[in-house]
Image (cartoon, rainbow, N blue to C red; front, side):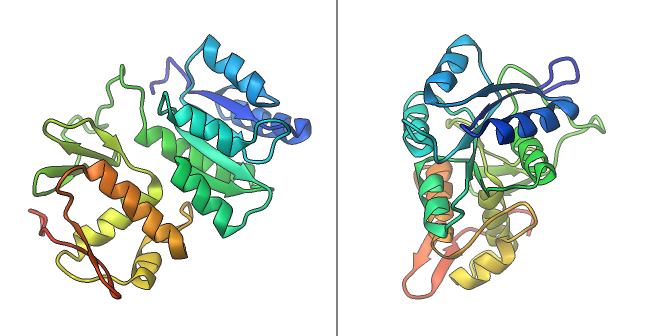
Length: 240
């Protein structure tokens, strides 16, 4: 994103008060926002233009958020932050499995939502725009085997494969492996290492995150499952 073209967001929620509150707060912070009350309204908005991020409510009358997300993932990769009033672990895990990029329980703090939107937009900048390092130099990367991880854009690169932006949880888990290569890390250890103020990593969600990370690493991924113990990165990164 650049200063001349503010990011475009779509807020989809059947609660008109909450929808207007979120949209107004995001607009006050220099984001372009459209809203929709249901899946039909979302489809109409997506047909009119492309959005940089969709904030999607899980529980809506008619078609629910999970069904909407499944349809979306069948045809595009628009980043999605899912909101749910239930806030149960199982709902978060299902949302992540279906393809949500992030998840927040309602009612959410608008400032936290804004922070997560900004973090997600940094990782998934528009493909027709160029992101440059503010210092004019190359952005820092960590290289391991055939892969390269951009630490600023949080994107995986591999020759012959599409660029793969990482979610916050995926980035934290991968950097935990890179900092401790060829060591078995238990789920509890990964939860402790990967948790952060803007990341929800817990129990079975570790397995979901690693599964999604493996898909982005592609064939021959270096993450190994150590039965009854945890996971291990089989490669040693070039930078230590």
